[in-house]
Image 1 (cartoon, rainbow, N blue to C red):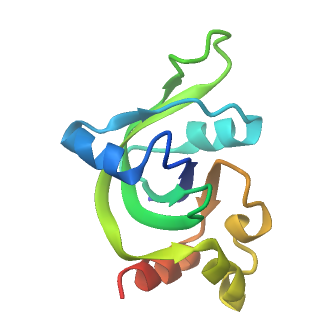
Image 2 (cartoon, rainbow, N blue to C red):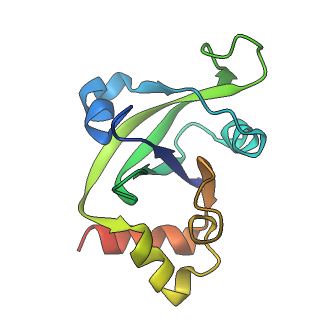
Length: 137
C-alpha cells in the first residue's frame, strides 16, 4: 500500500462532500499539474490518502481510500489528465495543520512542508504514521 495527500479548497469540495458520497465514493478530478498527474497514475486501489483542506484552513482533516485507479479525467477536454475515485474512510479527531507539519522536525522533508502548493503528493510510511497519530489523539 502507498500513501498520498490530496488537496482541495473546502469551498469547492470538502471532506463533508466526500463523506456524503458514502461507499460509492467520488471522482477526484480537475488536477492540472503534470507532476500531480503522475502521482494519480501511480495510485493503486486500496492506497490511502490524507484529505487536506487548503485556503484558510490548511489542514489534514481525514483519511480517504483509492477505490478506482487512474482513468481519463472526464473534466479534461484535451484528454491529457487523469482522475481516480476515492471514498472517505475516517475523519481526524483533531485536524493536523500545515503549521504543525512545518514545526515538526521529523516532517521537514515531507512534500507538504517543502512544496505545499502541489495538489497531489506522496507521503512516506513514517510521515503517514506521524500525521495519523497526531490527527487521532
